[in-house]
Length: 218
Image (cartoon, rainbow, N blue to C red; front, side):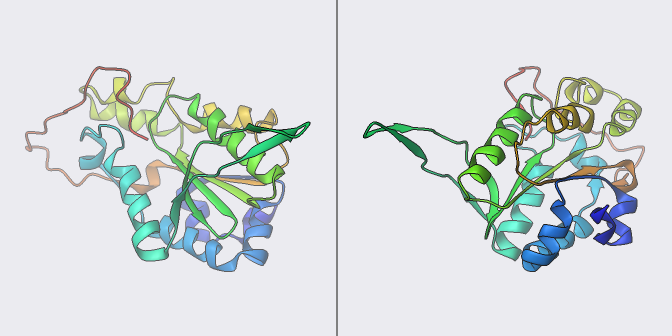
């Protein structure tokens, strides 16, 4: 499989799944974007202090990845205005904005959202690839194995990162079922190998999570 093109560090620290030769396409046709993705993944660490901190609309974990791609590597958030014309009458076919786009590579970050957001992302990839607007879709999410880490932290963390939120076991069946259509997709799952306990046991940590289900951390 072409995911062997990835550096050893990435394969050892992330759960990687590729579909329709996404790695080969990225490395050969989009070497700058390929290098960017590897760079941000190699720089990333999953800190306990960020896990226990409330995120509001978007968590500090998602923001950290976004900021690295935006500020250091020139990726941008992008909305597409798409429509079809039927018998001379235009009909809008709206797509959700892409978190990070560079050249023809679309990247979405799903850290802790409701799992139907995967359907939105994959449908976006499918439509934009069909319209020849993107060549590859990339998703950075969390590996299901992190549930064990969340439970070990205790407090409200286990509830916040529930089984109905975005994690790998919720994503793979959607891709395998054709959710992305013909779009090549590369998925990286953040694993416990990236976890760092940067808090002392004696620290008085406030688990400032809201119970409101609408308050999701992307």
